[in-house]
Image (tube, rainbow, N blue to C red):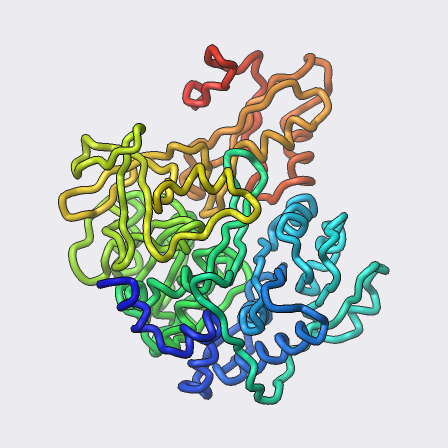
Length: 527
């Protein structure tokens, strides 16, 4: 099926008004149906769209214009969803910021994206204010607070601070605005690279919507489904598969602000959840919790896994414990999340991430750029091509050219495909560490460690972890034995400058690091 044919399956309103049209369409077709459950709060589609319109109007009145970048620094919750669709509905671009990040990391994203406005949850205001620094393009701060009393306690800032308004707004004719899906950006999602600093992957409305019909058909999602939203909605997996996907099909999002195995299972039982998207580390934690207690999960019909490699052993344990199929998918931020899926209906091959979704092509390339034939002996770099491919990294033409060649995105992952087109991943070309579904790039951690007085050299690698997939391990060469550094002081320093999932769990002091003739550290020897 052609990409244009796939796009025709998306209602016309979505093609004209982009991603925000997904919510607007459901508000008109299923207005009274429950869209979001968050604790004791229950919101239908009409109310959710009303909140988005209200926030959109507020942003416009504060001079946020079409094409402006608006950063969202919020945990999972109705306010994040409303603000996400609000920004897109006025033609602006969402810059999601992980609530686990620290001020230095947030500052880079705000400055690099040139965000003109920051929407922050009241529980994260202190971190947000500490990160503002020299974000010269930023001129508005919106706080999602339960009352205006909290704003009175804020420290003085040089920019206007407003309480985010989520009250129902009157029907307007200019929300969502008309967009050009193939050229207008919807989101700027920051993903790290081996060069250290995160880069903004530019994803258009077309990128996010182009493979939605086939993707949702393969997931078999419909309006009767209730999807657990435990994954961070600021991540591409949670944003597309969980949030946009569930809204697009008229299902119900059951939110928990931050993953905890016991809370997740109790919520699934209470709210009769039917779909569970998670990363392998989350499944490991839930399986450990299930072994300790009894949970009624008979409403569940499918488990989805992504974000990190899922071992055959863990997949089988998931299916045995939950009593439903476990379906694994594969993609990256740069490919709008889903590129392959081990099908729910049809042949599911153990240890494979499945074939490409309709409209997407998967390639296996040799080191000299030639496509390799099927077979386990023909391992090469996995590449993705299709309408889901990002337009590039923001303000990074050289970095873009390094990963996109002749329409193919080179993932850095190594694998092969079989005669049926199923992809098998065997390793990673890049040095990426995946801890609990979070990407950790060694260079970023190494740069922080190298700023510690007394450190001469540093190398960061990933080592296996039963629950989290991998742990971050740092090997240090110090100036002298009397510099006073200990494992604890190194971890404490990293905790001040890095998100917790990036902090080394293992710190080892060594006399030297193995290097090749050009001086590059041979990390394979460290592993």
